[in-house]
Amino acid sequence: MSYKDNLLKKIEIDRLVRTIADTIGPVESGKRIDKAVLEQLMTYFPWSRRQERDLALFLEADGPGKTRILVLDNDLAIYHTRVEDVVLRKSPTVKEMVNIRNAIKILNDKDVVVSKKEASLKTIQEISIGELDLRFTAADIDAIARDGAASLENGYAQGVQESLMLFAELLDMAPAPKGFSLNHHDIYGNVGEKPGGEITFGPLMMYSLVHNTLTFLEAPFSSRDKGRFDTLKAVASGEAEAAASGAAVFDLMRTKVLAAAH
Image (cartoon, rainbow, N blue to C red):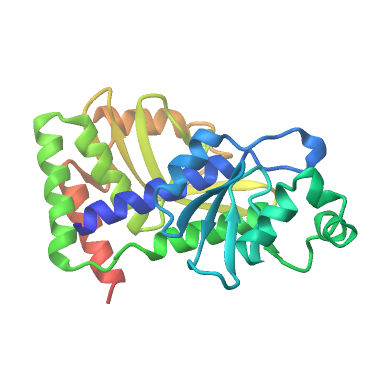
């Protein structure tokens, strides 16, 4: 598996986790985790899957002893116990429920629960990403820059977007917040906040699907700057100057990534 492929997997894991996190809430909220999205995330999770009664379980280690066990439901509870104990607590039969000792276990699982919901989701994310080899060489970064430049030259928007997304991940750049985004433009940059609620965005890189142009702006924009959208549009159309344009943007991002790695 190439470095690029592993980095794309990390980005996808993070995206799925964000989507699921938005659907997690207290019982009274009525929120339910999207099972289809959760199943996509679990394809990256290395624990062994097992079906017991109506429960989808993921075991850190197989065997009769205690281990961490994830139950794939709306609570996303991770237990540290045996499989049979989780099955008893989460999906008891009528015969099991009438036993007083079992009833106590069913009503109170604090003795075996490691985490639930957001905390468990973070564990799933960390373990899944931990399976990926995210070490890179200069040649790996060179390849991403070359792919992006070639895609830009050939008008292959998807290829440009992919390379831009990869560099954004490597440089901790976030997608443009609502107050800085433009339709049909992929924009990534550094988001900051000043006292009084002022948001800053930049340095930033911007790919315009309208013009098939790629630009980099060094100076950050402010949410209080009413002309920021006009400036962004002018830069994208070539009517205003940028710090770097075209394939030079990918060269600049490559240099920044390699400099940060040393």
